Image (cartoon, rainbow, N blue to C red):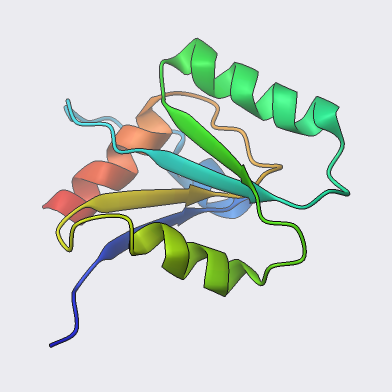
Length: 109
């Protein structure tokens, strides 16, 4: 039996679409971001700083030369079937905390 998992992939376009939403979600899932060795430290540090400022836990992982899909499957396999896992592009920065909470509420509904 295949395990059903909810995945939210936060690309630049998705973050922009959600940034104006309003909601009441108290649960914030872990947010994962992968990078390769060619990503400048200033990008990684900047992303981490923004997430920290917003109070959102971000886990950045170096998965150099690994296909994105393979890495995502590895991350999903670390979680329970009913967990909500958020993936964020390394160069995507949420404008407000509501970006993550709105996406979580939509999936958890």
